[in-house]
Structure formats: structure tokens, C-alpha cells
Image (cartoon, rainbow, N blue to C red; front, side, top):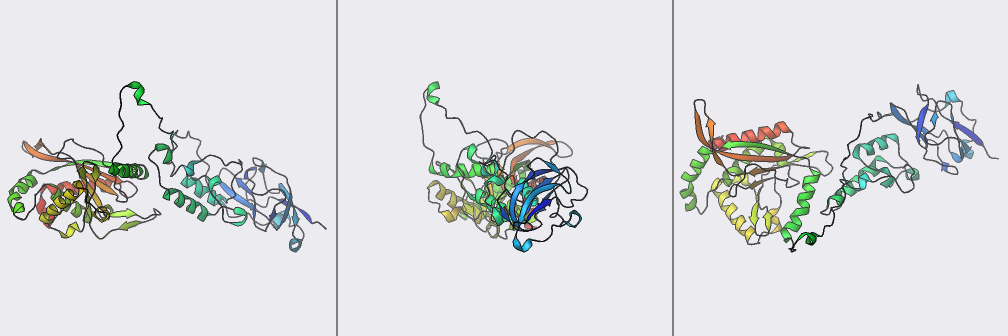
Length: 431
């Protein structure tokens, strides 16, 4: 004989007229005790209403959007044989699942553009229009990450979505290679229009070099994936330049051409030692920093095919003259297209210099997974107040871009300030 029982909303504290935002069961479903029957949401919290016993759902008495209070009839349930016991009284009904704090969104206008980690994470409603089966805590976790739960496969009972399912979805989405168009980077932007430029005048098509085909998508990814901030500063290198010129003949005797760059490398390493976060990378899950105990410094080289970044390994253990010689060797290999993969791997920090060309300041793009890159522009003579008068000083523009997830503005300013001090008086590098 069928044992049909009514299931009502149990004690939910002081909450009344609470809206139903999800009904993860339907007539005919066979459920177990403690499976979620309803998900309720008030202006202060969300909560699950669990099944008091197992059985088969005979009929639903509510729908999404209805408002219920303690004692409201939810559904009728054909109790399983082992659960065929008298229906619990309202005052003895089991308490709902733990309430998960989830303040309702403030009624403010949302921005027209809200980037999400990937295009998959920002998809609209699922094809069936039904809400996914997940607890309030998992729903809140997914909202925090910008994940559309209709796209997540649940691994729990009755395909219930667990927190681990959301994490796996995000990791899988972020690991997928991205194309070079904006619409494929999860920014919810329209695709670039295909324009026939020939209708406006003569054109020609020239294929991108292999270097640019490789570096372009990487730079695009780095720019989008890491929140860039650029700190601008300048350093008085008047004395450094005089010292460099005085040491030029000595460097030539050792087979090196002494430029400003070897001194920049040594100064950057000293600043990295003072601020170790600049010699770090985010872990793949973004939960921790991997602090490096070595100092491999990359430097950008302009070649006919585009920019490449060879790496000076263990630069902290090399003299200025040794670094100068290695810079020359690696630059020649780059221009001759003889760099191997190992020559461009393992960098901790990159320096890119436009000093030989011109310009003042610019915004270099991170060479991820590094968290900072230094741009150097052309130095120029400027009148600088020395306390008594304006005197001509050779000033070097510095542009430090960094990943704001790792480096904050105060650290960025301190780094460039220290770098400027070291370049102004290279004797400090000995301290």
C-alpha cells in the first residue's frame, strides 16, 4: 500500500514569505533522505530545504518564484518502505541545511562591460532554461568566479554540482589555448569586423613573421590575463654615464662593449633582492607565490623578425664585464636566428630598452609568468635643482609594468625609487 506523505517547510527561524529560487526535483524522482527539495533565498541568506526521508516524489505543490513560510506544503512523497514511519510533526521537523550567508546584490546599475575569466564562464542560460542542481554555497562560489553553472557537469548525487566541479571547470577553461581575436578571450566583446580595405584604395598583404605569430597571441594573453599597472620614474645617471665611459677601454681589453644595460641588470637584481615579490610567479591556482632563489634576467632584442627575449642566467653571480660579453653573444645569436628554446626560458624579470631609438615613457607588457618588466627610454639632459641652482643632469626615463595581483602600487614606487638610487650611485651596489 502506497504510503503518501506530505512534506512541509520545516522550522526556518524567523524567515517568512521566503522566495523559492530553485526546485531541483520533479514528480517521479526517487530521492534519498537529506536530498535538497527546495532552495530558498531571503534578503539575508539562502538555504536548502532537505527531504525528511527517502521516497518517490508524487506531486509538487509549489513552483519557482512562490513564497513560503514554516509549515507551507512543498510536495507529496511516497515514502520508501524502510522510511514508512509517521510523518514528523511540524515542530519536530528536521532543521534545514546550514544557512550560507549570501547578501543580496545591491540595487545598483551594473557596468555594460564585465570581463570574465573565459568566454565559457560568461555564457548565458542553459539550453533547457532550468537552473542547475547546486547548493547555495556552491552557487555563491560560482557567482564569485563568474561561472555559469549551466555549463558545469555535476559529479554529486543526481548530478549535483560540487565546489570541486566548479574548480575543475575553471581550470579546464583557463588551460585552453586562446586565439588572437578579442571575442575568443572571454571578454564578451564582439568579433572584429572583416573589412575589405581594398575598397578604399590600393593594398598589399604581407604575412607576419614566425616570431610575431608566436609572440602576438602570448602578448595578447598576458595583457588580458594580468592586470597591468605601470610606474613611471626617472633616474639621474650623470655619474654612471661618466663612469661607464671611463671604463670603456678596460672593457674592450676584456672583449666586452660596455653599455648601460649591464649596469641596469645589476641594479635590477639588487632591487629584486630588496623586494623579493618581484622575483616571483603566481602558482597555477593563483593561491600562492612561488619565490625564486635564482636571478635569470631577460632582455629584449630587436631582430628583423621581431622582438625576442634571451635570458642571462645567474646574472647575480656575474660581473658587469661578464654580463656585457654575454649580452653581446646572445644578441648576435638572436639576430642570426640561432637562439634555442633554452636560451629564452627561465627568466625572472625582463628589461626592454628603447634608449637607442628614442621616446620618453611607454607601457611594456609583462612577459608572463614573470610579474614585472622594466622599460628604459632614451636619456636626456634636464635642468635639475641641486639646492642652490639648476644644473644639467642626464636623466633616464624608467617604465616599470607589474602584475597588480602580486605587486601593489607602494611596492612598485619603492622598487623604482631604489632602482633610481642605485643607478645614480653604482657604488651602492657594493653595499
